[in-house]
Image (cartoon, rainbow, N blue to C red):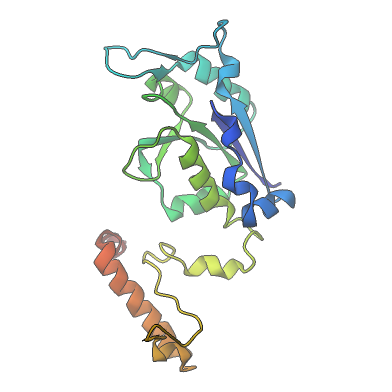
Length: 230
């Protein structure tokens, strides 16, 4: 069975976006993964197809209605055990570990929020796992869903030309990735480090590891602290 992603959104035309091209697009054509969208507005019951209302207790903006969204979720997940995710800036930060866990399953159901957010009752009542792609605010969950799917699809079996390439990237071993170089040997008076052209594979591996550790120490010391706790 191929990996299947179902997106609940007010803007289905935003999908598959960039995932319809390059490796992900070719993998979709080969049937290695599939994507379908559900228009949340289709589950509104009034003639204006209303999906939002003012926040209880006052405040700016609007909130997605729980009854409408719950009907959309129930439609998408009937007899379906795929994880239900809500793209949200207050969610748990997305990690490569979680990406691999999701990629190992049959697929995901992703709710894309809009406006000020989603009624908490539908989050609780439909067991939505809130996921964040970073400490910043987007206009909606659709770009975040595309990023999440990009991270998942690329590591599905057979999507990358060389499956081993995914094992030597940033975050896979708890470190940022080491620097990369290619020909020409000298460019703008900058030369490829001699160790990389030495043919000494043990020395190359040692250099790459040291570089990865130093970059992580400079830019993401939190990763080293987490690694040390394990």
